[in-house]
Image 1 (spheres, each protein chain N blue to C red):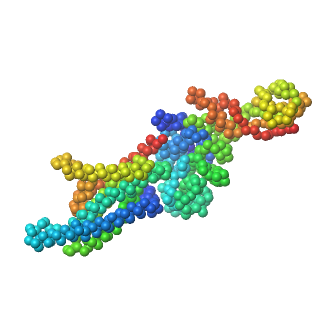
Image 2: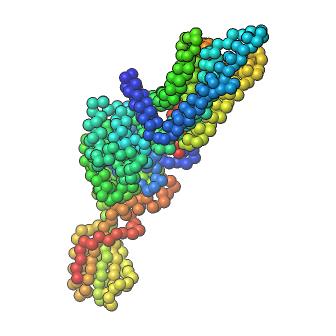
Image 3: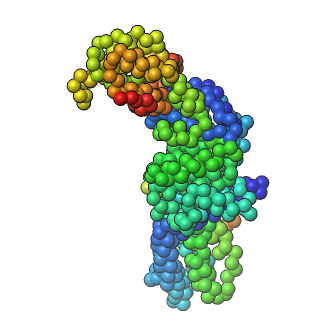
Length: 340
Length: 270
C-alpha cells in the first residue's frame, strides 16, 4: 500500500533523509520511529505529496506521490505535524469544509462528519469555534479531518502530541480500530506508542533507516545476549569462579556493595541467551553451599533497541549493522526469577 | 468539471465565511462606507461641489459672460465620485488581500489545501472570487446612495455610464486584489503583505503619472498598460475592449503567479 524506495531529500546542502526504503502492507499500522530531527516529518510530507523528493520514489496505493499527485491526494488522510485548522470556524463547519475539498459527496458529508467526530470524541464540541479549543481537542480535530473521507491510507505525523494520558490512550485505540480497513503510517518519538499500536516499526535516525521489523522481533533481536544480576552471600571469589565455568556465561563482574547487608555481594553475569541458565546458576551456587538471595534476568525493552540503534555513530555514514550494536548501555531490570 | 466547480465553491464559501468571523472586515467596510458617504455629500453639496460649480456656471451666463462648454451635472458627479471611490479603494484593497494566503501559511492550513485533491488554481480562483464578492458588497450600498442622487437629475440620465464606471471600479479592484493575493502568497506576515501591496499600488499610480507626463509613443505605450488610465476611461463612460482585456489579463496574471508561487513554495520549503 505504501512503497518507499531509495528516497532522499536535501534542502540545499543539508540532507534531511537519505536513501530510505520501507513499505507498509494493506491494513497494517506502520510506526515510524526516530528521535527529533531524524527526518520523520520530511518523509511524511513527501508521502502526502506536500514536498517533492530529491531522489527515489514513493508510491501510495499504487500511485507515485509526485507524478500522480491528485490520485494520491484522493486516497490519503494526512495529519501534519501541527494540525491545519482555521481558528475562526466551528468544528463541524471545518470538518464539513474538509469533506467538501476531499470530494465527499454532499449526501454523505454530514454522516462522515458525525462518524469522525464520534471517533475522536468531538461530538459535544461540534458547535465550538476551533480558536476556543484546547490543544488536545485541536489535535483531535486534526485527526478527525484526516479520517473524514474514509481514505485507504492515513498518514499521521505525531498524532498524540499534546494529549493527556487518557486522550493518548483513546487515540491509540482509535488508530487500532482503523487498522484493517485502512493502512496507517504514524510517526512518533514515543516508544510505548509503537509497541502498543504498531504492527511493524521502521526506526529512522539521522535520515537513514536503521531497522524495520515487528516490535517483538526488535526486542528479541537484542535478547541474543541476556544479562543476569545475582545477590550472593559468602565467598564471592568462589561464586565468580563457579559461574565463569558454566558454558553459556561470557563474563562475570562484581558490582558495588551499595545498599547491601554485610557479606552480601552483587554479581553481574552476561551470557548467551539460554532460558535455563537461571536454574543452572542457582543450582551451581546452592550446591556449592553459597546463599543465593536474588537472581533476576534483565530483558531488553524496545527502548534499549531504540537507544542502541540511534545513539551509535554510524561508521563512514553507512547504516551500522544492528549486530554490532548489541552492547547494552543501560538496561531496565525486569524481575523474572528470584530466590532467597 | 463539476468537481472543479465544487472545489472552487467550497474554497469560495469558506473564504467568504471567514469575513464574518473576524472583526477586521467589518471595520474596513465601516470606514469605507463612512468615507464613501462623506465624499458623496461633499462632492455633490460641498462649497466646491458639483452643484456649486453648476450654479456658478449658470450665474456667469446670466451675467452676460460668454457661455462655457455645457456642464452635465449628473455626468460630472458620477465621474468625480467613482474616481474618488477608486482612490479610496486603493487604501482598502491591500487590507482585503493581505490575509488571503499569508494567514493560510501562518496557520499551516496551506498544508491541508496542498495535500487535498484541489488544484492550486481552484484555490486561488475561489479566494479571488470571495474577496471580490466582499468588495462588491462594500461598493453596493454606495452605489444605491449614488443612484438616489442621480435619480434626482433633470433631465433623467441613463444608467449606462453609471454602470460602466462601476464595472471599471470592480475590474480595477479585482486586478489589484489578484496581484495582492500573489503578494500575500509570498509571505507569512499579513502586515508585510499589506505594505508590499500598497507599494505596488503606488507603482501603479507612478506608471499612470509617467504615462501622462511623457509625450509621444512611449507615453501612450505606457498609458495602454496603466490600469488607472483605463479605469479613468471607464468612469468617463468610454468602453474600450483594450481596457477590459488589460484588466482581465492582470487578473489572470495574479491567479497564475499565485498558483505558481504556491507550487514553488513546496519545492523550497525547509
